[in-house]
View 1 (spheres, helix red, strand yellow):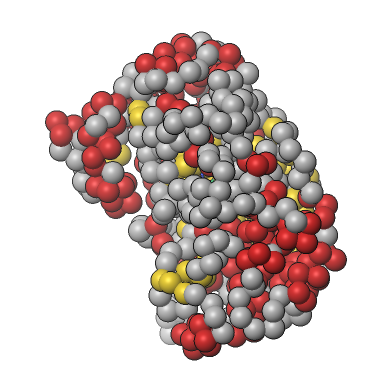
View 2: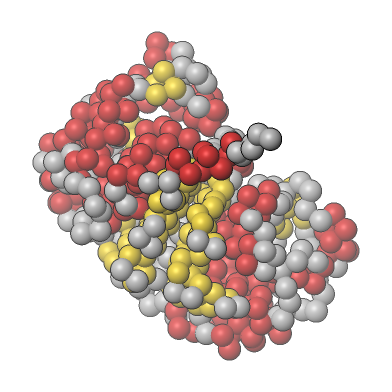
Length: 547
Ligand code: GLY
């Protein structure tokens, strides 16, 4: 009798043991990042993956932007802030005085992306810096095939692209927009990246820095070389908390994400419920979102400029109070939400979609973890590319509370702690998060999608931790989003109709809407697993790297 050897077993043996996993929202970035992970470690792969994403999804991130990373190495969990900083010409009324916070040079902050990647890699990467940058230089030079997500972004921003000489040469040569399947080359960016292979000096002090200042000022901005030279990344103590038997680590201010996630987990756990999409669990979770986003509005800002009552916001006794205080039925009144309403700190209210952000997660067999979210804020940022350097500049300055009581591009109301100022970083929702179980990384996850980052990340986390679902199954479930104001709760199509009907009869206001785009990497029972969210419009295969 012939013994049949299962084909898949031979395949697995031939591949060797697992070395790690790369999960991102673009296939080219996953593939090239994985090659680097095979040769090096998670920190090497993180630099390459981030740089490649800035080329293949240039509307979502890039060296003209900034971000946050929560990471683990040598049994320590850290976070690094490489958020864009306002130039020294900024002051609190800068936008009240009539400047545009979303378009053009005044919407731009000094980019932190490269300084952040360099710092993350320093002393942690296994490969030389030049080796992890080179694949990006090559891709920008040789070009890549435009995928569905970039094609859609070009189409929906076509007028802005045509009116900017830098963007139009690359994305609409001869006035014809690039479509899916076309080759996109970025020779100007390749030159900038080539210089970057040597280190950061060119970008922050020398030619490229000088060139960026000239470019931004020619567009009506007020930048000095000093703004680039004095840019600094900051290590910050991650926000930490627990949920059930898991330890949660996420991004502290100037992100609002970590505090909001730990606060919501605390309020939800104090309710004594299980996250099972039942009526009671859904109502409690909606209340938790109202409280957390009210406090985001009241207290969120750059910790180098304002006191943020972190200890009180993260205190489990506050979470217990808020969970009891929530009405038994009906929406949480928005004027009775959060620590801010107890203390009388709620901001005065006068009452987008995500395209400008990306998240990726990388784990390796050495126990390293990288959960990194990067942004240029809205699609194609300030809608300006310097034709000489190929840098697309962010419009992150709109994440400040540009005008008191007026919502930003994401409909978020924000308080005085987030007023613009010189050298200040605007409040963010980016929530790179790591979940640890018995000292080992269990999940690394995060999202893009403005405030939907926070609610998308926490629902995925709860669905995996409480519901026991795989990352892929968790991402396939419809989600909710609520951000204190407006009072609307957005739900994705297909979210438990009976639960929504009952909550509607209690007074909740529902609208169909979108959720964040979440990327999850997991280490469970000695194996790497993960899933990339299909919500951005591309099916991305995650890559499990073998030795
Ligand atoms: N620009 C989106 C965020 O930082 O939340």
